[in-house]
Length: 240
Image 1 (spheres, one colour):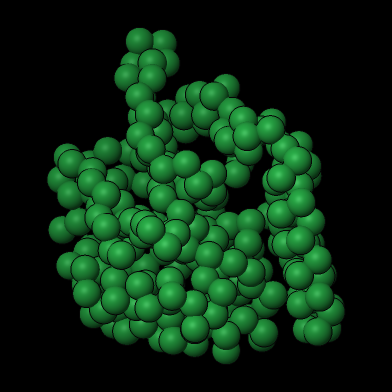
Image 2 (spheres, rainbow, N blue to C red; image 1 turned 90 degrees about the vertical axis):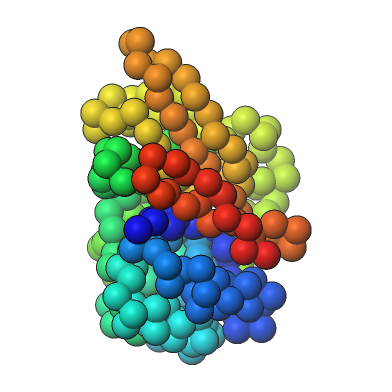
């Protein structure tokens, strides 16, 4: 059976058009999968299970329904939804994964990641990543009153938009050296990630070995994709 991977859907709520797309996928093509991996930024913001679970109730219910059919569900935190917690796990029936993580993907050891760990030229984001991946920092943030977390999230999104507008494009993409080091450290020749919003497949050489980096698509009005690994083939499934 096939394995499906997706990332960067950036859901804003149950009235988001991408919510309808995702529900159609979960109730349809996803049921033919052995497993579904969500590699971060499924949600545009997650202020904590207490505040965000009700906002995304329909999608989370459909993930749970998919899990009850026997499809294994895995979730890797992204920079937008790093605050998902145990209540989310219980409601969605998804298993939280470390980032990065090597999995056996249809017989090929593959490094999975949200992707921002490889964007080492963006030093400001790496400073933020060091915080959001720290469980102690997340615990402190979740102790802040919900109304204040929502205000902080709105301000952070505005700062992020201003920051992206002023940064050179290459800074927000992966660093080739960081990718090489990641593959060598984990002893694999394939990386699948999201985050950069630059869907593509790249082949390159490391010490005589052909390696591959596959970038998942971010979901936009004109495109919504899921990566499907089936046997030795990997294809992009249009779920628009």
